[in-house]
Image 1 (cartoon, rainbow, N blue to C red):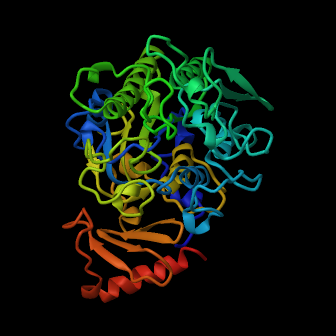
Image 2: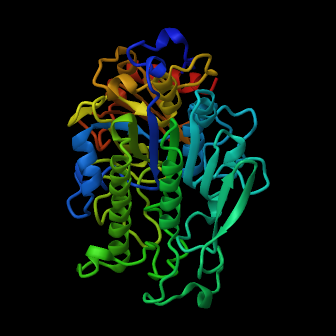
Image 3: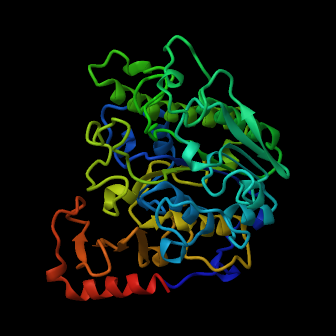
Length: 450
């Protein structure tokens, strides 16, 4: 893929924020949420009224792709605007953000934004130099080490501000990673501190502190990722304070917990929108919601129980559609036409370019993204309609051009080809019938790593 440098010529004056007030930006990156987990994307049993309303009030992108099919590289793609052909990792091996990495948070700080985030960072352990405060964020509260990010009742989170990161103790919780069963068992009536609630409060406090300034806020909430060691309170990988409205359902406990995780996440989105309305920030704030990769099949949860990948094939750790294609909704009252939808292909590596166009940024370092702001605003974008999207995981690769999707399971493996317009489930390999398209996407995959 030819990497794009965002230049002033690519920024239509009508879309640039340079002529008026800069909008606030809130970007929500759920963890292991599937394409089919939201009501507005076809879910029937799990309740997501607030995200469904957000889709009704704004736009759905139905062909939006995560940066990767697993967490850490997916975040690296998002932060840097570079796809996996131009990244040092394409799996969950440890990685520390480098000082040379230009991030979307650095871009927004250059544009005069206060920058904050909560949730899973995954780009550097404490003391490594990879902490968010060294890479464009004024504030972060959550998990720095990815290995600790899936315990919802940890002893502490990390609160980073200024030039230091400090532990934020969470009252009453057991040690992170403690394998002793006696330390991981608690009665349901012995309430402890749920990390999601702490991070949500910190995020809302950030908004209140900065309501008179343009701000960027990334909400990398960890719901509905499983606690793969088994929940300390619920006894399974779907770790929630209670099963909520699902407690009397005739479902396995782990599935009650999973459903409540998704609904709990949805409730936080509702609280967020209510706060923006209370502070009179609603019309000057763009909110985007998506997920870091496809649905998980871990911690006792069965990905098929709620049809979490909807009509798509595969799930987390697969480059078939179910592993990388995500629900995406965005709202910006008065700017994004309500109740709209686009099937144009976009990717997490387009977020940095979108921020650049939104804020009128110039001289942005070379990256692989194109802005999806015109599409959000309901404007035609021939450049976006003609681009090729790329992803990989270990030795697997995938590319999409228009409705054609290619998958290759290794360097010496044949290319599989699917026409998603008639085969969204990737069931019928048409490579033998489309040699020209196979050649086109094979060449692209080679060029993507240059």
